[in-house]
Length: 115
Image (cartoon, rainbow, N blue to C red; front, side, top):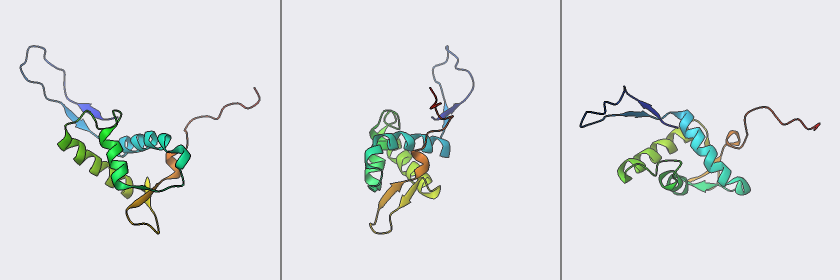
């Protein structure tokens, strides 16, 4: 998930600063987790509000951040997902999105069926 950047932490200091970075790779990983929850309803579009709610309230996503940052991070992640076609808008309903097929595919070698 997020890349935390900074030097070593000095145990004697009174303050510690860390930098954190998120990218499209993190957004895709989060949406793949969300897709696992939606596997049985794959063909049903979801709303922006619903997707962002999951991002803000799931412990694997942004739940550990303060509310102000959760809201901003979920908005950023949603927009990154739409720009990169991880979420595809429906042609009929406004503000509803399909999860892209790439979110449902597992990477890696297929299991040997001969066994």
